[in-house]
Amino acid sequence: MLGGRQVEELDRMLALDTRCGWLDPAARAALTATAAERRAWLVWQGGEPAAVQAGEPACDNAQLRTGLQYGAWQMRVTWTLRAHAMLDGTDRPAWLSGLSTVGTQRDALQEASDGLDARYGASIQQARPGIEQEAQRMLAARCKLRAQADACPALPNDQAFSTYADRWLEQAEAYAAVLGTVDDKVGMPPADD
Image 1 (cartoon, rainbow, N blue to C red):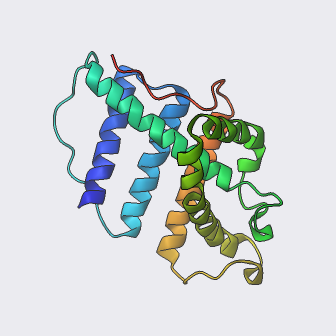
Image 2: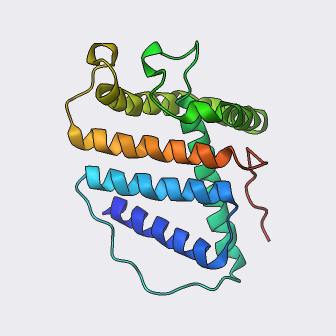
């Protein structure tokens, strides 16, 4: 039930931004990615989105705007770290090389990652291991489909999870592509009005 409410709330946030235009392109991409990922997770778990609640808040609601912008900024940080964790390199397992398109945005992702480290070092470093583990699990599902099976980490044979993982990876790739087009790779949480 909670997952269904999450999807409903994310859909409401997207609709509100469509109507009010409160988010910059990277924040909008992060919100879109989160909504799509949560919907895919809900399908994997066998749930359904909650019924959409009636009512459209006014676009001049500063408290709501700040809340939406702050939530989208947090999502932006998460997707930056997720996409960065998908990059191949000497410090990453060899099997994940070539499993994602995020490498085309390596410079943008590195700039964003370095900027987050500079501004929020301890909390970003604390989040990285879990995010890297999550990204590798998702890439392992893709590895089974695209590479020689013996080169991939062992995963349970779960087609529903594989479908979810591919959707997760697609969202990280889509976010990385948008991040590559914006000037401010890190972003800032909104200032309170």
